Length: 485
Ligand code: NAD
Image (cartoon, rainbow, N blue to C red; front, side, top):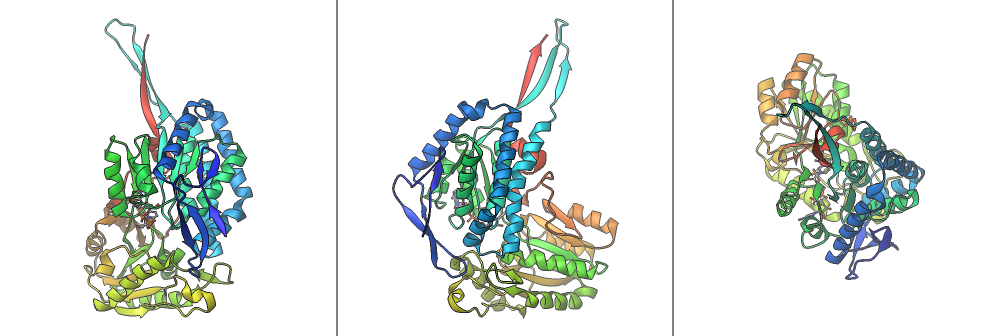
């Protein structure tokens, strides 16, 4: 059986207290690996190793050498692409095509930010002084230091490297706490870092859980200079409290309850195709996914029928089975959560258009975390499944009559991560995009991402933005230097 270890100061190791936990397959619920749980002492060792790297070889590396090293790392990741894909599939059960797409973003996250730090513009001001000689001001960016990176399980490599890429490009060191559900790709990246020649202590991985475990040890550690987190809003709030001790900056990417808004003039096929992906891709475990669909009334009946047909055509199964579009949820525990919402929707009076249960699986897969793609109609906006993030392959579809009405209803939840608007009316697209409360709005598309653009959530979906210059902003300390002439 695979045993996954922490990666501290360039070496794989078990936890100081010898604790281990089991990782189960989402496909069968069988134990597929044991994982070394990092104790408080291991987290402290990782932070110290990071601090030493900042003072040592890594801290002294000049910019072009750092960029070259991270480019080499990205090349090495590409060379090991099949290993990353296999590890991601084993942990998550996602279809091979989805894993392939997500893992490709891993090396891209290093390449894009290595490229970007070569061309960071700076501010420069001449000023006059009382003695008439003048002074020059210029701003430089320095690394913030040791960055704590706390990650979720839904797109493990993609979301971790989305933070580690810019953090290292800016000259920081990281201590990564992967989700307890998905330890493998973070560990594999340790091997790749070592093979690429990244100095010891620059990239550290500590495995474990959240409260009372590794996550809390890391975020509470006073040697961590900044914390970047992706996960649930409740967890983000706990991390923000931990970061308040020592007044450390946080970047929080959190939950969503994202609307898809389809106007009657939309290209129906494109809107259906985009909405199907946004509801069901990765078994609905995408923070940017759609769980509330609003359709302009004249199109409502046709849209629901087409969405039902598309959902029912999705093949559910093992990652490598031909034609599979949807895998299991991450765990039996998450399956129970999603199924409890399926039951709640019925209890609250929903019409179940399709799904609502567990698909009929064969053999060992009968024990996996499977659920059916599910569509409801007929609920009021204040029903639980219309307000709370479920993080499963499901959506509620309701009709609307006016633009003002749909904007108000789309905004009537505490979240504000993303929205997808489908219309051929350009002026309306601009109006709705401006008024819908979300950090990311797609018009006539979904999940198109350019890594240079700002990314983050409004309201309880996030604090701060990452992506492009916004990542550079978070992962550096801007310093003004004033030189008297
Ligand atoms: P989670 O909040 O349960 O866990 C995320 C990470 O935080 C894990 O590594 C966990 O061990 C750790 N953690 C938990 N409690 C902690 C604590 N008190 N202190 C420190 N660390 C702690 O989230 P999840 O279930 O892994 O991921 C799903 C959630 O992530 C969904 O809500 C989803 O919307 C969100 N998400 C958001 C984005 C985004 O970009 N906004 C992207 C992906 C996922």
